[in-house]
Length: 202
Image (cartoon, rainbow, N blue to C red; front, side, top):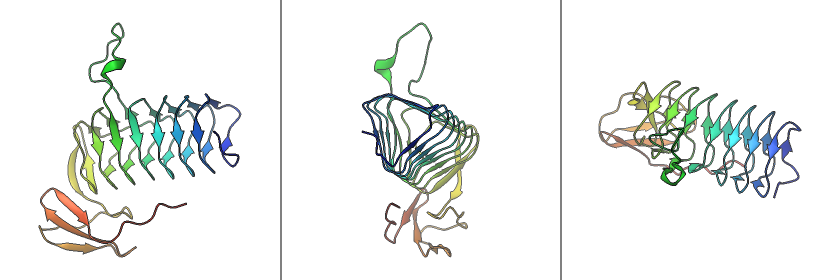
C-alpha cells in the first residue's frame, strides 16, 4: 500500500506489494523491492535501493546512493549519509550462493551514519550513535557513541541533539544546553539518558 500523500518520482521503480508511508519521498532512480515497509515522513535520495522485506522506520533519511539490503533494519529517524554501505554476508563469492547465510543488521533509533561508512553485517548500531564518514564498523556500537576510523573505535559521546559531550568521569551528569536532555556515564563504556526520550516526530 502506497499512501496517497507519498511522492514517488516517475523514474523510481516500486515493486508492489510494499508499504510506503504518508509524506515519504522517493526520488530519482530509486528501486523499492516488494514486501518492504517504509514508514511515514522518510526521504530516499537519488539512486537508493531498498531490498525485499526491509523495514525503515518513520522519519528516516537516506542520502544519495544508499542501498538497504535484506536483513538490514532501520528504526525511526535514522540518517544514512551518501554512499554508506551495508553488507549482509561475511564472505561473499560470486560463484557461491550464500543467501541462507545473511546476518541481520540493526540500526537503532536516531543513529547517524556518515558518508561512505561501511557497516559489517551482524552488527547493531545503538540509539543516537554517530558513525564518522568513511568508518568501518565491524562490532556493535553503544548508544550515543561517536565512532571513527578503520576499524571504527569510540572517541566520545554525542547527545540526541547531535552535540559532542565533554569528557566525563563515571557518575558524571551532563545537561545538553540545546534541549535540556540529561546524560550520565554509568560506566566507562555506557552512557545513559536519564530524561525521557523525545517522541518520534510526525
